[in-house]
Image: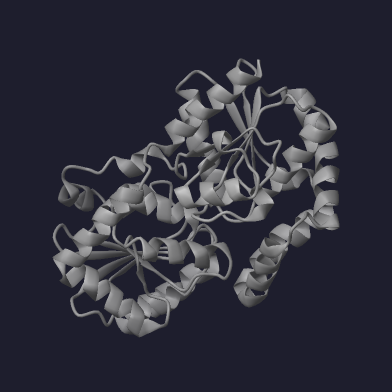
Amino acid sequence: MSKGVLFLSARVGEGHRAAADAVRIRLAARGIRGEVVDSYRYAASLFSKVVSDGYIGMVRTIPQLYGFIYDRAERATAAGGFRAWASEFTARNIRGLMARLQPSAVVCTHAFPCGVMAAYKRLYDPSLPVIGIVTDFVVHPFWMYKNVDAYAVATPEIRATMVGRGIDAARIGVDGIPVDSRFGAVPADRGALRETMGLPRDGAVALVMGGGLGLGPVAKTVRALARTTRPVTQVVIVGKNAKLERRVAEEAKRNGADVRVLGFVENVFDWMHAADVLITKPGGLTTSEALAAGVPLALLRPLPGQEERNARYLVSRGAALRAARGDGDICRAVDAVLGDAEVAARLRTAAAALAHPDAADRIAERIVQAVGAAR
């Protein structure tokens, strides 16, 4: 595998890139280099702008439309003409990249490059190993191609769905969603960790996140947490959303809450380990990180589509509480976690049953096996 592994991601949030990086690091520990590339760079410029920018704009302003499109596409029995054209167009465009890198395998952490590589294998190189890493607790048909060599998925239910759609069961591993191994390394002395981060050693700490793009009702959550039964120190990570950072700071100032507002941070694992509860939108990567870190989850209003399905799955398995219907829901969920040790313990136990802190390592090994089988 001296030629290395190419990871194809997509610039819609930070999760897909984070998943790729987690596996890339575990391959590096095996002496195998990897490179992460945004697949949209090689798509038609109009398609790239419409899909990436359009997705972000849609989920910010009219998420119901995104949900309608997601559901409609999920029910489709065959690939649409435009999607097939986009995949083949991009497959042609990446031939130069493939010639330059000559990867021993290609790993896709988003459905779009998975379709692109299925087209590339069909048109140019059927022997090239391609691995798909599904980064949610549900799977959309846009992920599924019979000529993709291996899949890593989060749940047995996803595996069953894919088998039902004709994917060979032997190609699907229930490995989990890959996260940085540091999320699973829970510190022995959480009080000492809090002190190093400027947090109260013994008081209640609530972590609020809106993903890398700072989406979701984050400012409303800050307002709601000021009315919880017991005082709570809030840590709010807004990602790369500078506008939201200002709004949260203003909201905290208005209600006099103890709030620490952070932009994009590299050590999210430390903040999760320091927190008593995490209030977040149910993105696949963030919730997988939380499961690995063992922090109880309260899920904010999900976006229609994969986030709504993530929320349903996690709540149905007892690994999260919903806090989706407004300020009262948020307060009740947080009070339940902070005020009832049994509730918090049940959430942690259920989370541990779903967590895959070693997913990146397992997937790295799956990639090594796929390449070996192709030789």
